[in-house]
Amino acid sequence: MTDKNRVLIFDTTLRDGEQSPGATMSHAEKLEIAQMLDEMGVDIIEAGFPIASEGDFAAVSEIARQAQNAQVCGLARAQIPDIDRCWEAVKHARRPRIHTFIGTSPLHRAIPNLDMDQMAERIHQTVTHARNLCDNVQWSPMDATRTEHDYLCRVVEIAIKAGATTINIPDTVGYTAPRESADLIRMLLERVPGADEIIFATHCHNDLGMATANALAAVEAGARQIECTINGLGERAGNTALEEVVMAMRVRNDIMPYQTGIDTTKIIGISRRVAAVSGFAVQYNKAIVGKNAFLHESGIHQDGVLKNVETFEIMRPADIGLNETNIAMGKHSGRAALRAKLRDLGYEVGDNQLKDVFVRFKALADRKKEVYDDDIVALMQDSAANTDSDHLQVRHLRVVCGSDGQSAALTLLVGDEEKRAETTGDGPVDACFNAVRQIFPHEARLLLYQVHAVTEGTDAQATVSVRMEEDGRIVTGQAADTDTILASVKAYVGALNRLIVRREMTGPDSDAKQISMYSH
Ligand SMILES: CC(=O)SCCNC(=O)CCNC(=O)[C@H](O)C(C)(C)COP(=O)(O)OP(=O)(O)OC[C@H]1O[C@@H](n2cnc3c(N)ncnc32)[C@H](O)[C@@H]1OP(=O)(O)O
Ligand SMILES: CC(C)C(=O)C(=O)O
Image (cartoon, rainbow, N blue to C red; front, side, top):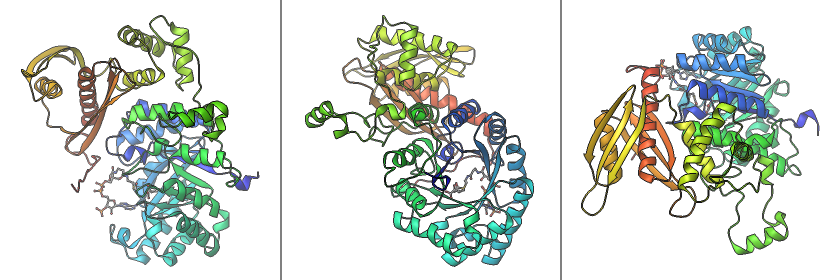
């Protein structure tokens, strides 16, 4: 293995990942995720888009100050004020990077209304400006995979001559396929003067489900940086998933002899944390980090695994930080066992957090015969999503349901004041949501209401996800409880708490709102 085979991992969970509608993270959550990325060995953290809002600027600046090992990068349009603002945020980092971009395909050139020559000039000016501020500049021709090859070569050459040290080739709309992705990198390496002196990166979206394959194909052709996100979070169908490319290169190192600096045992912990703070649950059959990724249910598979685990497992759970333990958790378990179990499940908790989780764990154990690992994961996600400092908190709920109608009596703590409502509805959940609306009137539209049973059995916990939209802002809430109706109310109230924070961050007329468009 040589340095030539070292692939840099550029994580954009906090920038492109956060652009998923509803995935907005709080300032504290961003700092926490950045620290985890830094500790797991990510080479570059794209921490945000500093000109987008004061909140983004503050998060990028603080992450820049906090990162111990990773380079910290901010995104900037091909505009001088964006680049200056980006530099102001990242300059505190030990190793700052400015990432500037502009759409170069015919469709994207029309957006700022620049012809080919004007755009080429803009690229020259802005990359030169960025390079005068920082010696580590990344440039991206957005929608590169739909850009004419001659023009792509021309603008990449301009960016290299102006001082870009990394050229990222984005498949912005997830349009390419593996062979084409590789051919594009090969073509640029062959045709662009100076291409051998910079690093080519790949940034793939997953609209056709090929992001991981396209990224790996680009690496085989000579790209040495992969842009990716935890759990594949990102715009629309998401980005290349960090855990997928990293584990693919590790497990199939025989045919992909590349190395990364990632400590793969940290994968499951950060995956769960990102799922909790973004509100985007990981699908059960997701590669590497899905709940079923290492489960064997059918008899022939179980028989095979018992005889030789390699029959149906190409990697070990411990490789991604999932440790099998024989600690059975229940109402007689103490703090030491809970801490050990949490560590096995990928959670490192401090003493204060352990105290809080222990109280919730005991309350759950009192209500449930057996507390499974998945129950503890759900409990951790619930405590991350709903805290004692939230503006709205559920105090008391009584629901009557049955063939004679449904009604709810709900008490919420609103700031310092307890408020109560009694309502009816089309079903118990509807009655409860009507009660929340009566206590806390709002215009937010419910986009998604989803219930999952965490484990089997009638005493199983339910996890509920709620997604809501108000005035272009999309927020999510998540909660878990053995009482499905209570979990529903907590998830709904959790989404409203996030909405309250978003209203404070963006104000009623802010430019930073997310625009959601639905074709059906
Ligand atoms: C593929 C990607 O992921 S790109 C990154 C997407 N991320 C984001 O958009 C982050 C959040 N965005 C924002 O907060 C806002 O859009 C801001 C602050 C960046 C800009 O807000 P506004 O100034 O109000 O512009 P608005 O969003 O309405 O339109 C975008 C403007 O940027 C211009 N623009 C877009 N991309 C670029 C670029 N790469 N370089 C130069 N100009 C660009 C557009 O032409 C348009 O300007 P125009 O109206 O003069 O033609
Ligand atoms: C800004 C660029 C890299 C991007 O996110 C994309 O093209 O998808």
